[in-house]
Length: 235
Image 1 (cartoon, rainbow, N blue to C red):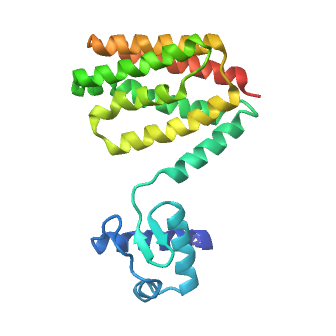
Image 2 (cartoon, rainbow, N blue to C red; image 1 turned 45 degrees about the vertical axis):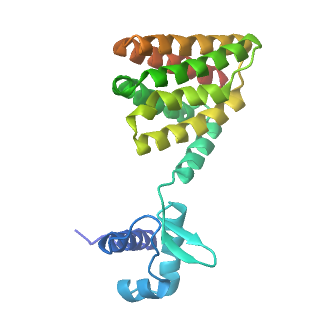
C-alpha cells in the first residue's frame, strides 16, 4: 500500500507532542520556567517559526504559559479554553436541536449522580449545615420568583467538595459556566424557580439521611427536568 503523506497539520501535532514530551523528560512542574525558543529549536531540530507556532497552540491549551516580560513557563491546570469552547457550541446548538447543550447536561448528570454516594461518605455535619444555608437562600429567592444562581452553584460545589478532587471540581466549574450561560439564554419562569428549590431540598434531605440511591435518583431527575427545558427552548 502507498505510504500516507504526512501533512502540515500532522507535523505540527507531532511537534506539539515532542515539546510536551520534552517538558516531561526535563521533570518540569507547573509554573517552572520553560526552555527558550532557541533551546527548543536546537533540541528538536526544527525552525524557530515552526516552534513558535506550536507554542502558540500549546499556550491556547494551557500547557504553556507566556508571561510578557518574564518568559515562558509550564502552564498550570486551567480548563478555561474547554469552558469557552463548550459554552459557544452549546449555546449555538440551541438555534437548532440543542444537541451540544444536551450533551453538556448529560455529562454533568452522569458525574454528579455517580459520585454523590462517595461524596456523602466524606461529608461532615458542618457540610450539611453549609448545604442547608444554600437551600434556604434558594427558597427565599424562589418566593419572589427569582432563581438564585449563586446559591444553586454553591450547593453543587459543596456537594462534591468533600471528595477533595481538584479535577472533578474544575470539571464541574466548567459545566456550571456553560450551564449558567445556557440558562441565561433560555430563561426561567417563577414555577421553575420554585420547582428548582424544591428539587434541591429533596436532594439535601436524601443526603442528610444517608440515602445514597435516592440522592442519585433525585440528581438524575433534576437534570432530566433541565433537559426538558432545553428541548423546549431549542430552535
